[in-house]
Image (cartoon, rainbow, N blue to C red; front, side):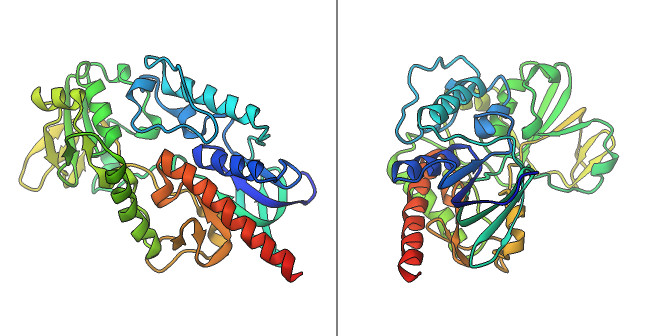
Length: 358
């Protein structure tokens, strides 16, 4: 275990949002390891992308936006996105000398002396004047609870554990969730499975036409309003609807995307509704999304009564030293880039005010 180390800024997480923050710190004069440090719990570069299932090729990725200062060009759309984006992130870290430290697990952030924050990790403790939290959501898959869930004799797994379609060959599969992952899973699994059933809490909304900048701003504004009120953020995708592309059209036409209302309970051999309908299943695949991974911030007491962390821009309203990027409205890749820049701008102002007052 190392002794206490001091820096001006700690960045937690090296996905899109964390690398964006680190890039803007470096660009505005902060030196890696002397002035700031990037801590990442993953074994290698790539953020959550390194854990995506092999059949999610780069050409299927919805809305991947380049990191600031370096475009991702010439990628083979048939290669797994996990490989393409991991290589891109690795190259990015080395090109800009960001010196990410990994694997480092951040266990808690708490109040220190003299207005500093203490970042307690698996590799010792850091003392810092400001924090960019970019931990994303991948480490907190959301598993809904339904009566009878523990009695199910088949297999239950989450999108975070999805291995690709081949293991579902010949099985009866219930896919739960109306987002992009749920529809992608269904379209991949259906040709191999004995039977698929799609259930969602709300009817899915399919959107015609391109998802342009104006629509993107409107979607981000809806998510932003929630975090301003201290409510748990919804994903940007949850308010944009599902793009009606050729694959979705085929799935609707051939009945694969024949959505059923949410079941009421789980039985040992499937799922059931109160009206008496039952569906037999070997597998329940929960494509039910993720929640922000912010438990390590609990000692700072940032949560509002509504259950979320109230954020203005990227700054936690309860503590101006803490910036959340990749949270709420900045959870999209383009939003993460902007948030990284905004967080660094505000942190520079904070540190300048502190120096002036010293």
